[in-house]
Image (cartoon, rainbow, N blue to C red; front, side, top):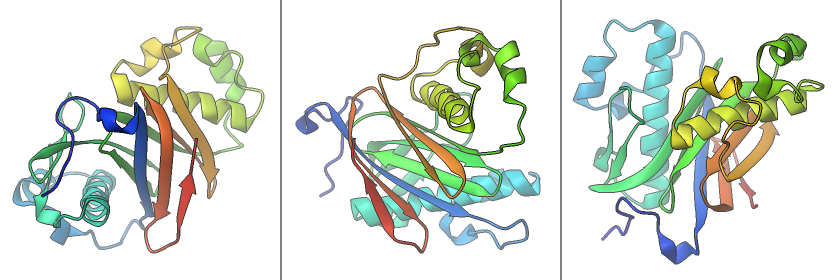
Length: 219
C-alpha cells in the first residue's frame, strides 16, 4: 500500500523536504507523448498552439514517469488537475503529492515531494539580456543585476516562491524586499538556472535528466 501525506506536510522527516526533479528537452517538431496523457488531457490540448501543447504534454508525461519511478505506482494512478487559476494538484493512488512545473525555451522540468509543498522555476541564462533595465524598473531586482548569476538567482527565487505560496509576479517585483520562501536551493545546469522553494529545509534534491544519470543535491 502506498503511504503518502494528506493535506499536511509529513512530520516524520523532521520538517525537511525530500525532492525529486526531472527535466527534458524537446524539439519543436518532436512527436508528443500522447500515450501518457488521459482522456481529459487529450481533449484539453486540442486547438492549443504548438508550444503550449508541447509544454503541457511533456510536463504531464514527466510527472507520471517520475511518480511511477519514485513512488512505485502505475502511470494511470497519477491524476493531474487541468490548468486553472489555482495551483496544479497531483494525486497518486488517491493521495496528495506536492508538485511544481516550470518550462523555459525547449526545457520542461517537474518536481515532486511527499513531504511538503514546493515551488520550481527554471530560466534560460542569457548574457545578452539588458539586466540594468530590470534594475531600473523593479525594486526587487535593484541590487541583483550586476551579473548573470545574481540576476537569475534572484529572478528564479521570486518565481519559485510565487509557485510555492502564491502571489503576483509584478506585485512581487515592485517590492524591494519581496516575501521569498524560507528555503531556496539554486543551481545551474546546461545554461539554465534552477531554483526550488520550500517552507521547510530541503533535505535532499535528486535531479535527473531524462535518459541521463541522476545528480543528488543536498542542502
